[in-house]
Length: 198
Image 1 (cartoon, rainbow, N blue to C red):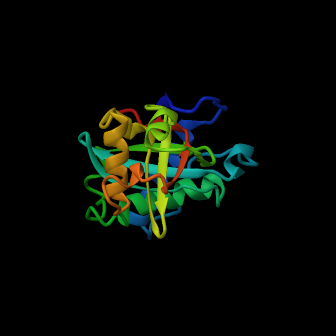
Image 2: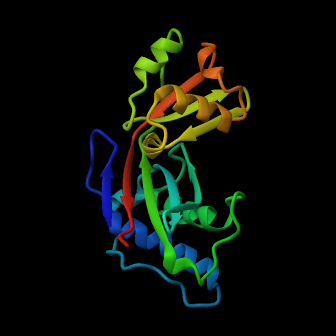
């Protein structure tokens, strides 16, 4: 398990356990008749698993995206969020067919824990570009019912802030230059990321 630090202030989290929980949830969906699969948890379970956190689960297969779904807001406990979003990423991402048992051994799991999104106040397009921090900030854009996010990892593919914001607006099904209009709601957050070793 490797941890990539996008978040400024880290707290001790057992990333290996989170990955085990995510994988166990996927296997349980694939083998529903098997005895319930649960990683070893202390009794009582660690307090931090009860914390409410936004969570994104990313699945990679041979270096290519295989599924990515999560929740931006801290609505459920970390335990529930990891398990539920792991299954959503594996089976409910409409960009991909559901994960099969045969390919699971080739899939790498990444667990991303989000800080609470904060509204970013800016005056114009140039001010927005200056306030968004590449490789640190996850970004949410919102206008009406249109909303989308890029995790901080996306900066690795789109390091230019203008391209980053343009592609994020397109993901939200907005005009590519909507971020330049000044009426877009923008939120930022950081992540604590754990990746399964392969």
